[in-house]
Length: 381
Ligand code: TMP
Image (cartoon, protein in one colour):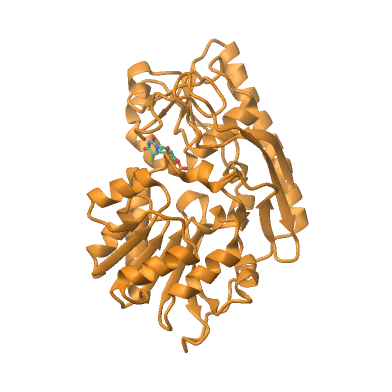
């Protein structure tokens, strides 16, 4: 439905003179039967995740979401043990451990993130989640957990049967599984085409999850909607023999026509940002980027921006700073650069955190700086 051509890996930040992992085709396919959208190719996860620069804990918006999630899940699950799959630097588990969960365990493939979690005292198994590591989880806990959390994991996984199989291995009769995914109907509705990158193999609907669970012993028990990352849902899964009546699934319809409109809107958004930035540069204005998110790579590469158009992109993630934006020579600098250099315009590539960022960077605005927000429509504020 959407062909973005050959693209670099969105988080493949390179040191000056360093070597890139490579390029891969980026194409979104859609199954009208189960409404799942997927990429046409799968990049080896060992290339994508062994050294992963994305750290979740640095944003106030995300921390607030974690607190909401912690409170919501604590109401649904009265147990004391929790496992998080793709636990990143252990921030959510840390919150849960301060809120009644006495046994917390992470499973995380990125060694650098496990080190950060261990500094917080969060025990983490440094493995991909699969039937082999599921055995390690059971051994570590001495039984099945009361709560399993998988935030933004499913969309990164190729072999769902393997993952669902591993999930069922660690689920007891009363275990609650909370699966958070970006909600594809929101992605379409809000023109969030930049969520399409190699790490996101699947674009989720409840219909697609229901289809995936058909042959397992799990079902969707409840669904809750959250505004994080441009719109996400948490699907609460339970075992079929749990004895709890599931809620009816919320109405949802994603059609081929919706996907066609989405692809058309994406093309228009790209033309708009490309023209807006190039016109400003032609007028002698300085334009930079804010937030070296994976989404930034998508915009920059798809618009063909170089240092001439986007001088630098600033970010507060230490592992991204002083590297190049993937596939370009555009440097990533620290976020203090915005007030030090006071460019004329900043494209907020981390638009999902725009409210927080614009409030935090009040000096930039006060000194005459203007924000360009690319989603849902390119606009200058
Ligand atoms: P994400 O949308 O994939 O989470 O990426 C957001 C990026 O924006 C991430 O690299 C961190 C960066 N960021 C800042 O630099 N400053 C901020 O205040 C926030 C909220 C995010």
